[in-house]
Amino acid sequence: MELTRLGAYSLAEIEQSLRGDGLSLQVANFRCLIQSDTGLLSTPLHLLYRHYVGSMTPDGFYDFRVTLNRKRVAPWKPNEVEFGWEGHSPFPPLPLAQTHPLFEWGLNWCIATLSGAHAVVHSAVVERDGGALVLPGDPGAGKSTLCAALALSDWRLLSDELTIVAHASGLVQPMPRPISLKSKSIDIVRAGFARAELTLPVHDTHKGSIAYVRPADEAVDGWTRPVPIRYVIFPRFAANSEFTVETVSRAQALAELMSHTFNVGLLGQQGFTSLANALAGAECYAVEYPDLASITSWIHSTCRHPA
Image 1 (cartoon, one colour):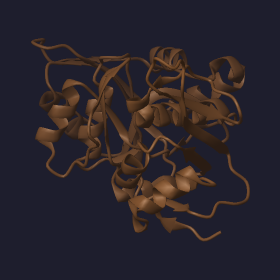
Image 2 (cartoon, helix red, strand yellow):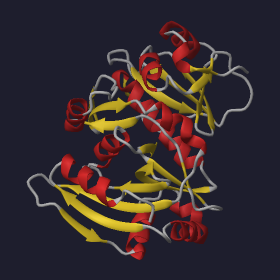
Image 3 (cartoon, rainbow, N blue to C red):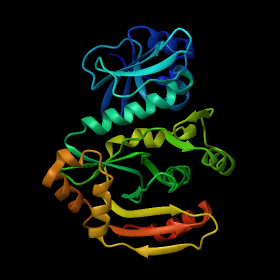
């Protein structure tokens, strides 16, 4: 099967493939086959995934075969979209306009669920100087906005959502994907970074308004270069607060990361040990910040060189 950058295809070709036998897409080391009859997926895929390789004539083995198809709930209700994986749906259907966010959320679920040989932590992660900076955070902590700001400067995006740590090596496996921004963060990134390429916002999702930032070509190409964890920062955005930094012990950081691990129930002692080993040389901090400029300035100066 011949693989071509998705950007080499026209929107019409991508749409035809989605409605036909499926669009083959290589996302890091995962092969995905995507089908959709909604007419709402080709445009964001063409923008966000144009540097990824794929094919209009799919064949062979796929890690994920997913569908996003229209679903009529009742004759008097508008169409919804349903995410399908291997013949069943792990999520309830959503309004049709949310087709693209549902694809991104569903693909995250597939990767997190099926990455059995790795610990998968819900956190953003970027790289510079050969070391990874992990950014865990609860909703509203600002991790995705911070991740976008770093990835649009001189950090390499490894992932917006999933820090994947290999058991055997303890290294972070890159999974560069579009960066999800919510509500006010959309305007902050659009105004602050002229080169950022964003999708149009999708409104009224369960997370509010959602838009996605296209990852840099260098990040997409760098998926074969795993790196060790050098820093873990627990960010917390608080408007009108003072900028504060607190050193966190590796034991505290490990406990917190385990609480953010998707497959912790499957990993047992192996997962705990692999994450502990991955943090052995890391510096860990909790940072409360009032604005994006203050924390990015601190990160650029503090996390500048190899430890």
